[in-house]
Image (cartoon, rainbow, N blue to C red; front, side):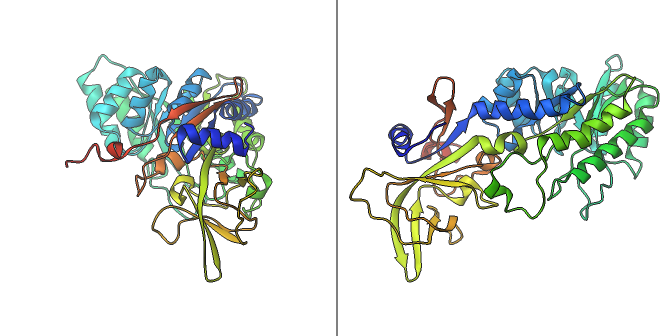
Length: 410
């Protein structure tokens, strides 16, 4: 994607003063590289893409075309997967809130459903009793100690005996079976040590509860770091693992454990690792002001559109042909359109800017779309770039006032 001030001005004329840019080919490249790293060690590996991280339909459909699973955590996301053509058997249904009807339909349709609580287990037991001739297959999300300060609220307590109860209850029913085990933990550092330990623990759990057969799958969840430029990487006070390093500590353990036996499918559920660097946000500088010693540039975006947990990579595109341009003082705060004092997209930017410049923030692909509230302004459009055709097309139109208030009674 080769951007310039002129390219961005042409896009503005078509889509407005702010928009997201989606590079779908970069997403596909990330997907392939991530999967290849794991398959080079443990060939029976597949990706379940985390819809919650970024559920732009173009991305989700691309995952299906690449052979991946849809990893969803709500009926809304499950319905999206079905709508774009994903068969139920290629959907992994996780998450803590699954209503009885949704849970039963997904199980009976052949989706991979990982139960998160004993209440969900009870729903499945009641389903099995109603359908005694139907074989009911489910997965279990496991919660065990991986050495973190915080105890995760998700899954079933392995050490507390939840799995003992479930396997005993399913054996009594006769038509219920656990097809695989799942785990997912969020840790701040997303360290290799954490992934090595959770993989070790889930293999040990598998050995305990599958003594006579291999499970259909072992799912070690997501949470991996993605690729980032050096300036962003330096903002972390710990090492950022690579795709290959994650594969080494996870896939190698499965390769060793299941050498010479039936190999269960290894499922990994990346979201951030695949999508973070495939989107940019474009905002235009529309005004300049100085308040005592503070210099400010108003941009047609906000912290809600870019979610800057770190100082995101930024490129400013200037109209170098405009001889009348007036540049700002420096350093200058690039601030957003909301009425909130903390709405600063980039504090103390060291380079002068002018009205009419375009600010392009990188690494906004993870959670920015799904977390964007209809706060003060509707959501901006998403423009998809096709590198093969050098073509920009609409992936989501500009949200309107009517969209925001359509569900209200007025």
